[in-house]
Length: 146
Image 1 (cartoon, helix red, strand yellow):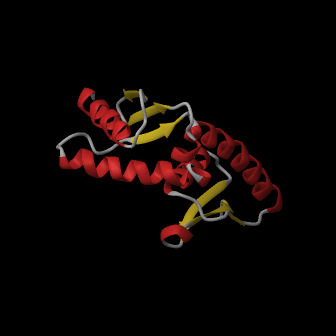
Image 2 (cartoon, rainbow, N blue to C red):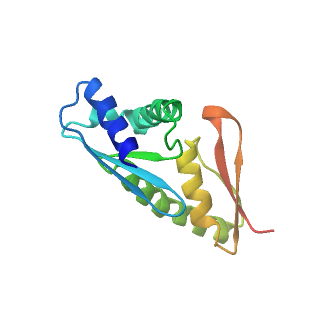
Image 3 (cartoon, rainbow, N blue to C red):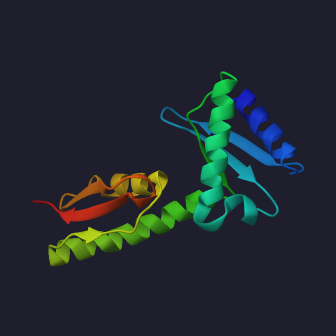
């Protein structure tokens, strides 16, 4: 984990970021990298697009150096806050699906967001979720349980 942290700090310094705050936390199922920056807007990008791209580049670099390549990156807790908002939103959608007995198609989302939705509703007995489409157009459909 120290090597991964060093790699990410070096990457950020090469981007011109002085003193990036990087921490790596690992549990049995995942490795999360938290980055703290003073001016993170450009690093996060519109709807977290840049986080996704930075994560992709860092995973390639990490793999090339023989380090852990399965990790997620969060900058200034953007993804953490996005996950909380998604969970609140999807609970409302689930209630609507249960009440109306009609499926709801959600807008296209990134894999991280779709995963949050599937996990959040996986224990809901009256709901089934399904991802449909490909690439940037992939979305989740929330359906009443048959």
